[in-house]
Length: 258
Ligand code: CO8
Image (cartoon, rainbow, N blue to C red; front, side, top):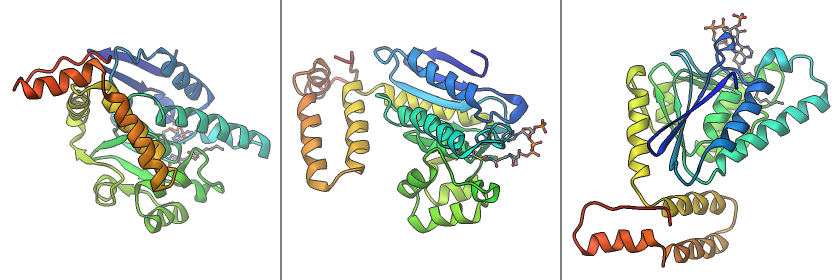
């Protein structure tokens, strides 16, 4: 492993993409390492992931332009396929993923953040889909996830103009949930992760699944799916613990993911 670091802190896993020579741009090696890092995550023990970039300048400055420059159509499709598979894996990962965007999140970097459940950023963050200016479309899900995150008109504006936006505008349009001074971002991400980690993991995972799967189906099917996921929480030890704690007026809850 050269460009992706993974550490755990109690029930929180932190993945850091580190390729300083190219502002953490995603080449094939980084994508492969991200994929194998996800294999390492023990989803019994870890309840939330934080994804960030190393350094103070970039989250991820895009897919690697030097690697892509000479692609044939077939190589372009294959690279898109690989990126999409890994970002989709992140999007559907059983536990929530928080993107702590600490600088440039352009092209594939913005798409990587979009595949996470929640985005927060530093005040020097810059978002954008510069692909149209490079003669390509976004290839890691940007045309699909951006329209699910901000308005269709705003997504199209970002895609067609290829112009970057700063943190405050990203916040205004709902691309990120909060903006922090750079040196406070990771502490904020840990607080948010800690808040999620203290809840019943089965319930949090079922919320993620219900939201994600519901987005892609009609309301009747989505509600039927929610009923199943809701029902599946009952008879679990954590449902007994959560409701028991409320009824006993007990503040502490000991959720065990069972
Ligand atoms: N790919 C490769 N190298 C990069 C990238 C990148 N995306 N971004 C930065 N670098 C490299 C630079 O080439 C430079 O290397 P060197 O020092 O060897 O010249 C180093 O990182 C530092 O960058 P700069 O000197 O340019 O730093 P600045 O502070 O001047 O500028 C910017 C920072 C504005 C972020 C600038 O680097 C930039 O514009 N980078 C490119 C951003 C971009 O266009 N990203 C989108 C790429 S396309 C994409 O992501 C498509 C995704 C879908 C792919 C689907 C596949 C089919």
